[in-house]
Length: 87
Image (cartoon, rainbow, N blue to C red):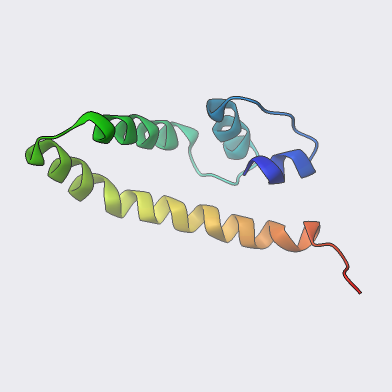
């Protein structure tokens, strides 16, 4: 995402800024959802209780994959704009 933003002339630093700008440019449907994914990821790093991990994975995985699929489709649409001509 950051590379696409840079190609579009958008300078970003922090991860939250990348997500905000990506949502603004419609690479993501909703930046807040991605902020939630970051929070859940941070919880999993320190969660050792199976109940917590099972809840996070079972309730988040399907939604995450849907959002990831949207992002990948957007990147696929963007990619040809930035391909270099290698002859």
